[in-house]
Every structure is written in C-alpha cells, then in structure tokens.
Image 1: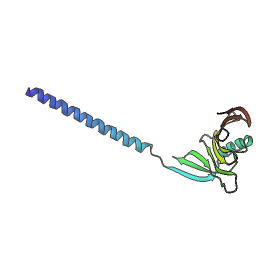
Image 2 (image 1 turned 180 degrees about the horizontal axis):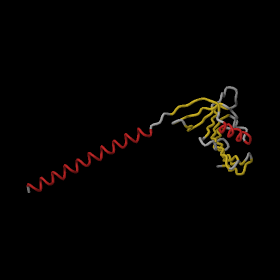
Image 3 (image 1 turned 30 degrees about the vertical axis):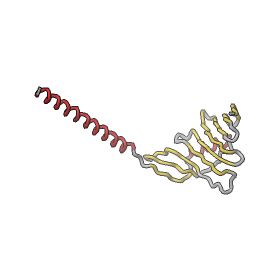
Image 4 (image 1 turned 60 degrees about the vertical axis):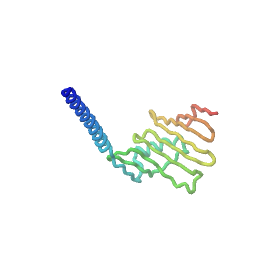
Length: 159
C-alpha cells in the first residue's frame, strides 16, 4: 500500500508540474506574440502620392460628389502606408460630415458624407481594369445604387 501511495504521489507531482509548465508556456507565448505584433503607427499630413491623386482624379471624373483634394493624412506602420484619410473644412459646405479614405493599394476609395439634403450616404469606389465601380448606400432614400463609370447599373429601393 505504501508503494501505491508513493507512486500516486509521484504521478500527482508530475501532473502538477506539467500543468504549471503548460501555463508558463502559454503565458510566454502570449507575451512574445503581443510584443512581436506591436507596431508604432504614425500619421503625417502631406500631399497625396501620385498614385493616390490619380485615384482621386479618376473617381472625381465620374463621381463629382467625391471631392478632389491634394492634402491627405497618411498613417504609417513600419514605414509603409496602412491607411489614408482626407479631412475637409466643412464651414462653408452643405455637409455636416464628409470623410474619404483610400486603401493602401490605391485601387479603392471609401466615402461617407452627411447633409440635410442627402442624409447619410456612404460606400466605396473601386478601380477595376480602368473602370470606376461605385457602390452607394443612401440611408435617407433607403436605396442601394451600383454605378459603373458614372452610370447607374443597379438601383434597389429597400422597404
């Protein structure tokens, strides 16, 4: 009986040590993973890059409600642009809110604006093989509109 208890105690100690080791491994994995993914994100207000401005020009060519502005705020992580946004002076405009974002590959622009006339309108414009495809959601009108190069190709009024 004595040997059975000693064996049981050794087994219990081994299992306890394994559990403690697993917890330490899990803790260290979590700490090192968090540290390795930590990035310093900085922002800089500057002129749009030629690629960003080309996207803005292409979009504005077909959709003039998306304004053309040379100044953007680029957000950087590890020296690479991860997001771009434009800010606007709304004091003399009809908009109470107006936001534009450009994705890092410069092929997609996100927009959102609010005015008394239009209500909240948001969506995106993607450039695909030289064409500007726009998806617009209008909360005031309860509609979804898809347009290609400035011409509506699908309009759905929601109930």
